[in-house]
Each structure stands twice: as structure tokens, then as C-alpha cells.
Image 1 (tube, rainbow, N blue to C red):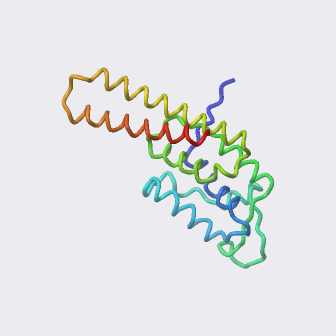
Image 2: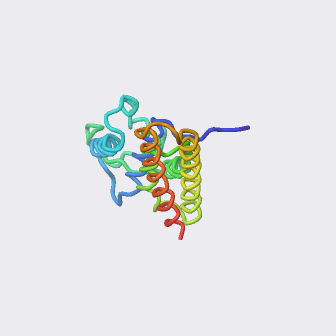
Image 3: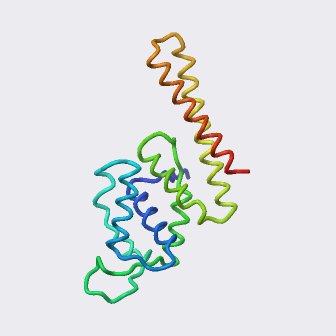
Amino acid sequence: MYSDRTLLPKECLRLCALGTLALSDKPISYADLANSVRHFTAHIMGPSLDMMGSSLQLLKLEGLVREDCNSGSYSDAQLSLTKAGHDKFQELMQGTLRDTSGELSRLVMALKMRFLHLLDDETRRDQIEILHDVCELELDRVLALREDHANEAAPFTGWLDMEARRLEQKRDWLKSLLV
């Protein structure tokens, strides 16, 4: 049975939170984690209703993080990753990407790049190859569209040329990560 593993906005927030905890060598307060996730996602995507309202408290309820201190307020609680949280992080890092240009896709790409070094060598290489292939497909679509509209007005064809150059640069950069 086919299963689409494309990350949804809620899963991107989870990946960002779990990855932030995985990067840290010490527990992080709920408030600091929430601020870090909000800061990162807002700088990649801008303000987005899709990226608000998903409570990080669910991570605790699902056993993905644990509270490491006995403070009176949840926002002061120190959170760290559980084994289940680490496993979920690994799963989310292997979520698929349909293209590299949409806002959500840019966020997924940024999250993968930010946390890529936390994966084992084989999984890291697989993820880079997948991102490279997605970029190649996107470039092929832009080049086909450019060819179909070769005789049209300069603003549109100029924009397609710019997109093709951007995708070629991204493709080449991803390929350099495989060496």
C-alpha cells in the first residue's frame, strides 16, 4: 500500500522541536523551546497560521519528551528527548519533499539541512540523494516550461531562466554534499 510521507505543517513543528532538543546537550525549558521553534519557522516561512496552534505539550503526552525538573509551571519545565522522541525525530527526518520551492517545502529543506548531521552516514546520504533527485525533477519541469514558452515575453521567460539557474545551483550544491 502506498503511503505519502510528505511532512505536514504540524510535523514540521515536531521535527523542529525534536531536532532542537537533539542538538542540545542539556534540557531546554518549554518556553525556550517554543520560542526557538517559532523563531526558526517564522524566519523561513514568515508568519503562518499553519505553523501556530500546534502545542508542544503534545510531545510530552506522546512520550517524545520528558520533563526533567519539578518546577511549578510547565513553561519553566526543562524538557529533554526520550528514546521514542529520538526515534520520531529520525522518522520525521526521512519524510519526503515534493519540491523545493513552496514555503512548506523550504521549511522542510531548512530543517533537513539544520539537522542532517544528526543522522547516521547512510541515512544522511540517502536524504541528500532524495533532495538532489527532487531538485532535478523540479529543474526538468522549469526547463520544459521554458522550452514551451520560448517565444513569449521577456518577463516570463526571464523569470523561468532565473528559476532554472537557482535550481541548477541548488542541485550542484546538493551534489557537492555527496562527495
